[in-house]
Length: 158
Image (cartoon, rainbow, N blue to C red; front, side):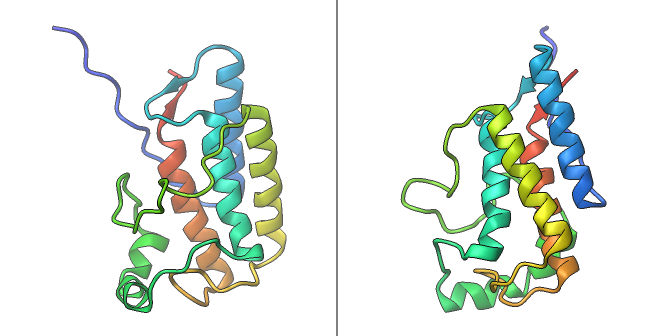
């Protein structure tokens, strides 16, 4: 009987630096031909996606949930900020899937993610979150850590 594929990694980032450290290790594993992709996205694509969603806090998101969905989601805000994000969550779908999934090299995606994380460490996003509205600085950081845990868990180097 063939061995079953290894599951996604279980991640729990405690700081924004944990995101860039993990992404850096994954990029190094890719350079050494040791990276295993468990999902459909490339590492560059995942890093670029995470960076873009951080940037939306400063520049605004290209989507706004209807008020009723925002009201319902706010009741689950703590789950998304302090809990675990699971793949295939029940977010309304954009016409062509989620936003910010453009193909890019790992180095370009990693560089964008490092820049976005550096900004997030020193400057609180100025926009309202497109679902949760006003967030405290720690809520912004926790939300992005949970988001990064989700997407980076689809990559292994073993």
